[in-house]
Image 1 (cartoon, rainbow, N blue to C red):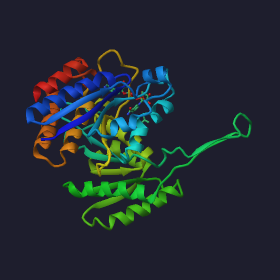
Image 2 (image 1 turned 60 degrees about the vertical axis):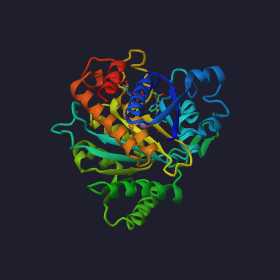
Image 3 (image 1 turned 120 degrees about the vertical axis):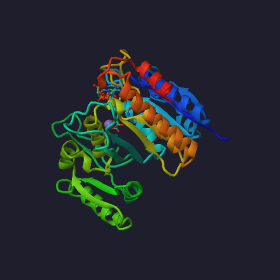
Length: 358
Ligand code: NAD
Ligand code: IPM
Ligand code: MN
């Protein structure tokens, strides 16, 4: 059977602490279910590399990575060394855009054993996906500074919503909603205030919805939608959002289900023309780096998503995904746990425990 080749890129900060635990668990699952997975590590796409080379990645990064089946990615950014927009546009955002990973799929789920910051919520009550547009929208390089250094100086940054880009993320989200038992979709908007791009987005939602008569959908302005993440998280099933709105919602969701340390994500090129990228939602966490207290489960869960995507319906890969998720739940209930979920264990202990629970 095929050997799947994965590029492993740790990046900065706790990316370097959690990635080894992710690899440990994916390798354990591969061994158990007879999958052939081979990791190749790269030390670039990090701020230390930037300080040595003046750029985040070697010139041939695209050629180097394009033949891999997936990228397993830690986190990038060390703002005291390199400005964030330089390090991120020089690495992660390049991957997303040049490998056309236009779907950022981010599960929000309350897991057993995790203290929930919202009152009276139990596992099962909160279980939805944020589907974030990942290549255009508010994250655009169109704009600039004008009259710089004078009193007339101003800056402009355009948001870009292409028909192709909007329709393909909506289609992915409607397909996902249609495949789930509740068949519900919520589109994030702000068409009351953002008067050009968001009415356009809404129109495309109405158009796409016609192809999915079985999906019950609504649209909600991003302000009240954020409030409802906190007040009524049980009402959501699939939430589709533009790049910036999806970014914010996909930190708010995990905050409602306990911790950033459990937030997984998949940056997908669904057509598989390029490698997809699997990473925790969180960043390099300079405030805790070096203490080895980062929760590795976001990284591990992202690894489970990677196996599921790589398998493309194959039963052994599905079983490996399900086994990792079950092992995560076992460890969250029985311990060991990192401090963000109420424990005292370190990153390695949790990674080993999940691998063991497999
Ligand atoms: P962050 O996600 O790194 O940290 C936010 C807070 O969450 C911190 O208090 C941190 O300690 C905590 N946290 C994050 N991951 C955790 C984990 N696994 N276990 C326990 N606690 C965890 O966000 P930030 O502080 O805004 O950003 C730090 C750097 O990371 C910046 O350079 C930023 O640009 C970058 N960043 C990168 C990514 C990415 O690579 N995908 C994502 C977000 C931020
Ligand atoms: C994320 C991160 C990135 C984003 C940053 C680091 C550029 O916050 O993956 O959510 O905004 O997409
Ligand atoms: Mn984010």
